[in-house]
Length: 160
Ligand SMILES: *[C@@H]1O[C@H](CO)[C@@H](O)[C@H](O)[C@H]1NC(C)=O
Image (cartoon, rainbow, N blue to C red; front, side):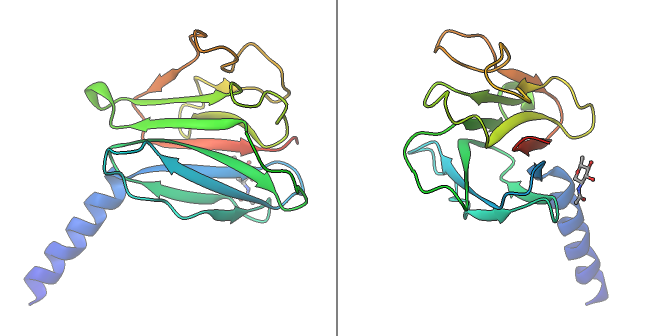
C-alpha cells in the first residue's frame, strides 16, 4: 500500500504544479467578492465566488484548460450591473496563457480589477493602476490581449 500512496502523492504534486491559478492581491482596505464566469457551453467547471482583502493574498486554482472572466465588487458597493473584467484563457493555443483587463462592459468601474500579469516574470501587464489608460480594452478592436507561458497570474484590486 505504501507504493500506491507514493503514487497518489506524486500525482497530487504533479497536478498541483501544472494547475493554473490567479492570485488576487488587494491594494486598498476594501473587502471584495470576486465572481467567476466560465465561457458557456464548453464544459468548464464553475468556480465559486471568493471574498478577498489585503489581509492576505488569495490564490484561486483554475483548470489547466479554461476560458472565462471575473469581476470584483466591493462589500461597500451596492450597485450591480456591468464591471471591469479580468479575462483569462489557460491552456490556449500552444499551451499559452492569454489574459487582459477589459473596460468594454463598464469603463466607469475604475476601482476594482486593476492589473493582471504573470506571477513570476511580472510582465506583460494588462490594465492600469489608474483608469483610464491605453493598456486595457476599451473597444472590441483594441489589441490588448497579453500572452505568457506562465500558468500563474496575479490580479490586483483597488488602488494602493
Ligand atoms: C501579496 O503579494 C504581493 C505581491 O506579490 C506582496 O507585495 C504582498 O506583500 C502580499 N501580501 C500579503 C498580505 O501577503
